[in-house]
Length: 412
Ligand code: MLT
Image (cartoon, rainbow, N blue to C red; front, top):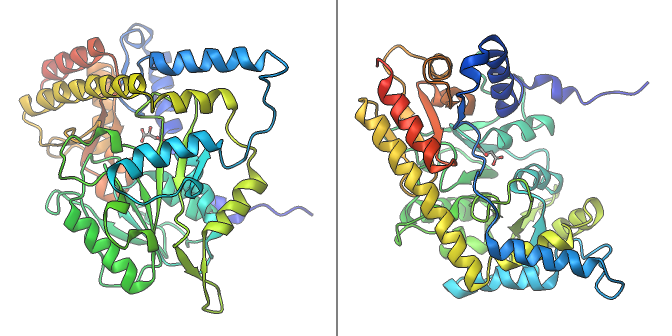
């Protein structure tokens, strides 16, 4: 007899974004005329073409692959040395942050990395997540058997939920209770909040005191415009001993369909064996990555490397400026109709309060039915997201302007 993983049966709804896609499909089939007008501001998927520097580098890599001398078969699982070097040099050392080339592990996406990291962590860890939260952190822990059942609000037994509210600026402070592993995401998905240096320092101090591990998701780092806001957890002294950082080329270089990301696992980062010995996590992740992953394609890694060229950097800046221009337009439209608006300043997500008495999913239905605009219901990110919705700024300028116009046309 083959047994299934019972933990999967604890999962509540479908994964949020496929569930939204399913509902949009049902609406579109029932309303074929309205379907033609639908504008998607739900999932944070980029819309603009790949930067020219990436395209040129990828074309060149394809041409190399077409020759015997330039052909590449399996590459190093951790990523080609030239890409790991470009990442460590540009994203970290050039900003005064100590990260070695071999502390970088190149992968096919942050979502995968966030889930895969659980392979090297013990099942006995007490896990803390913020609420609202990127659902992958929760669901992968459910799948791994790190939780009990969900209650009526969707909260899983065994997880520590850190409430993020308008009152705390959607940045949770460390809890009074003990957590072994803490997921933090800044700039935050879904609220668009950013953490100050002091707030991150408080988390690093907590992790040092509790010998905890911070899983720091910085996939939206490129959207930080405020120079006082840290772009990496490693800007905080002591973080190399307590944190793994997740980064992605999806949202800065437009790689959501191309797939390339990386994580930083400092060699100074330790965790405990069941017997209480402290051991480095770096060799475990290296072992996991090289056993279960065969590396990102040569062509894609050459494309990612090109993002660090002077042209690539300028093209990333232009993309960020484009999406943040959309964010401004969408923020202003939501404010203009009297809604409370958060985020959208150092992040491509706008987090908006629903009107009184309107749930997040009711708001989803209204926006879809009345404006033919797809948003993400806040409750899909956790119980504390109820009463909010998220608008993604990843769109063309024309669509952002049209969404703003349609929002203003709804009778609020
Ligand atoms: C989102 O919309 O929250 C993101 O696009 C999801 C992701 O990056 O996986």
